[in-house]
Length: 133
Image: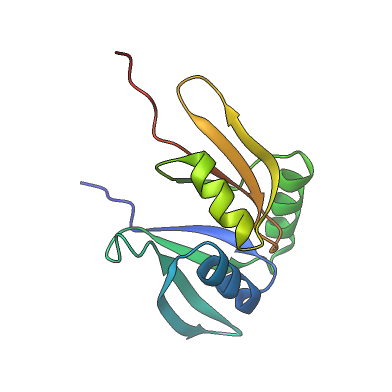
């Protein structure tokens, strides 16, 4: 059976990304190993430290930079994180200095907001889908 253990976002600066994802978003460092000129640098949710790791991957390849820039220019989030309450998370993250490019928006089954990770990406936060009833 296949399992997702690591997913990644391209970042323009690994040290800056680590600071943002830990200090601002509240993730915790998981793995930090040298990998050539860069690092195998992952963070995890403190509520699931053995869960899926987010690799803060250098955007050194021209195709990676072009992809990252195209998504950001078109307003497309690079990834999405689930939160219990988008309004509350938006307020808490704004208080920590996180800049949102889309405020909380009710999209029917979910509420979303989109933030700028300062490392070249837009990141969506979303509530769990609401069930009818």
